[in-house]
Length: 139
Image (cartoon, rainbow, N blue to C red; front, side, top):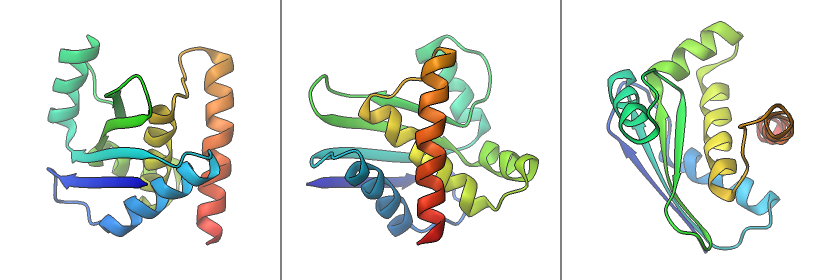
């Protein structure tokens, strides 16, 4: 069973909760994950910087942070910065819906266990991420 919760701590971006669920469930299905508990939290620049500094010792704004909660199974809290998402959509010439999809896919892949800490792992993760974003945009 795939359980997906969404908390909109930053409410200035409208993105349907059902879309979060559909996108994350799609990634889980493609990755053959049958059991997952994912909690998405939509935040702003100030909140993501604070989380990044406190837990990862990085004093900067980022777009998504994923915290796996268990060693077994797929269980994670995924923080998405809506303000950064808007900026990235503008910078990349894509819709906010497309960029939010990308961040949901990215966070879900991290929850599953993908890493982007080296050039090779980032290349692999980005390739999978963009394939899923492309497939989702066709639906």
